Image 1 (cartoon, rainbow, N blue to C red):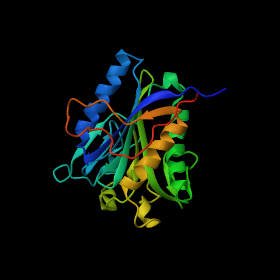
Image 2: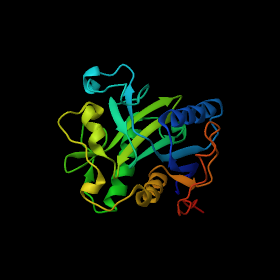
Image 3: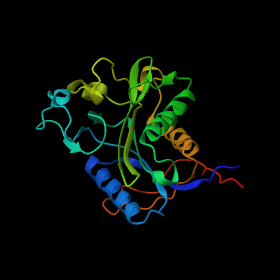
Length: 242
């Protein structure tokens, strides 16, 4: 029996999007789907200007070296502890209604890891997950972080993949509360890789793993209409089964 493919809008943002704008956009999409569960799924791919995000109620020891007068620091509601976003890091925000997929948060986290792992393995990188931890690793170094929030089984927040960022920003924190494993970027294995190159593969693997029909003509975000244009990716929509 062929799987049922669900519609998903791909929003690929070529410009840097401030974190607070992207957060407002996610909340708007989530609330729309709480009010109308029949709306399609959404995947947002973007990059942020430098910003630190902290889990509300997280442990201060993980970010005690941060100076809010020197850095943008935002407290949010999601899993994980503290992390850092900056240009060169692909951030993915899936807005999925898990009632149409599987109502299991552990399953959802593992599926996000699988999307990232399959994408990296297409470059012959030995990407893997680590039992008991969340994220994706290469040779014991963390290249992707995951932190989610779910409301009425609709997801927000998501994953961050270090492609070619400036990693010095991570020196001010203990990323995700894990002190004994370093953070890395893909350029340590693929010096010439860029976010623009890897985004189409990431989107295609996301569609495949979640059985989605991917369409690149997204709805616009009212808070920042100039930033959320149709995707510039040269990507073919995932075909629906006959």
